[in-house]
Image (cartoon, rainbow, N blue to C red; front, side, top):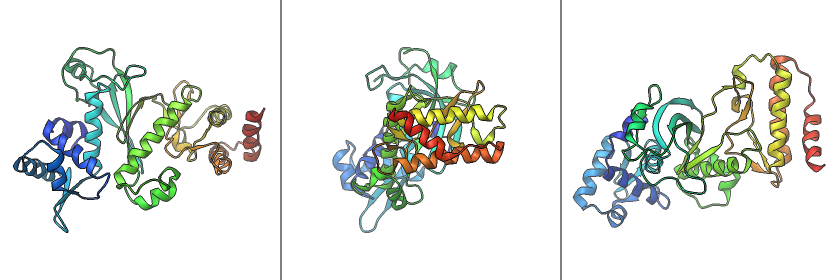
Length: 329
């Protein structure tokens, strides 16, 4: 698959419309019948088949002929659908390099603008001049041309990937999917992104998490925090750092959430020592019956890292009890 920005720029509006039609159809069917695409689209049979043929050749759409002619998309196309919405809303102007690739997400750096407070984002495309002159190093402008909508800010665009390997496993591991309809596996990613966005909105700024900026399908746009993962660093002040991380865990508990997947891989440390906790799609409410156990696991994961690497002696149970007791007081 070519660079995401390059792939986006090579698509025309009709191709994007076809991808969106398939995505909507996959909310009900694993393979979307061509009849459904014809019924909901504005293209002729010939136009639809031509468009689908091009998308299949680009490996953005997959086709089956048994037991009927049907089409589906994967994450490559889903990323382009989400990006097209973010560009149309004026949120993303330039898409840069990969920031990270994990089991359940792919994160790109970007430049863009935060939507107006209380709104869904601009309905106009941001300026082509800004996208060209203020591109990230190695990035590509992806926006069209209109009036300047304001100063660009550094962003991180996180494309969720829940369900990539096993959707059944994801349903078992995510409580928010257990009682829902059996949607196509790509929609597990959409639900995961929406959940993480909701958690970040609830916690920011009381807890040191990235500020959520926008949501589009399975793509979550946040402020780009910078910094390095805790596990990569040799800290000069490990005791102080551990205390700050535990304080942030406590702040999240007071805010009603447990991270539920905390480790040295999702704690960022900035050059000034600022701590930021990322990756919240598995977060659970404090009212969840598992919340205390998950809080204990998070605290133990963090303390174990500092104990192994820096020989700090901190009792996990005392730290957990302190967090709970502090909130009760």
